[in-house]
Length: 132
Image 1 (tube, rainbow, N blue to C red):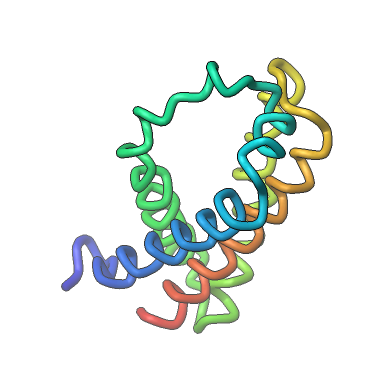
Image 2: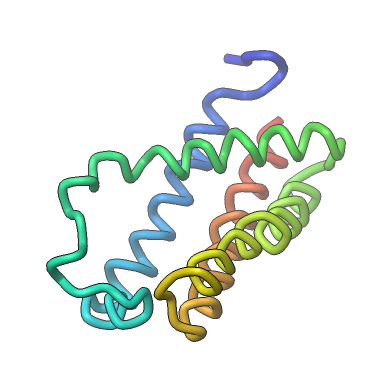
């Protein structure tokens, strides 16, 4: 099914891929204590009640990547992955600097976030690029 030229199923699959990669990074590879130290929050400052909103960012990322891939006329999974890498660096990673510069995030979190965005956006871009 397509909406305005975008494959809705591909967007959903890409969003799921992003969500799974984020789960692997932030729930399996990094302990809650490590995460709290990296972002400068205590356990009391965390908000587990907001977890139901977790699927929203991956869905928005996937929609945005679909738009960028279409605008670039990227061809195939490699074109989609490259678009994802570009968006990871220039949008996702760039946005990571705000909580570092103006907030409590540690410098080490920038490396984690860069890896997170590169992995998520490249995988989602590959899915979207291949599944036109």
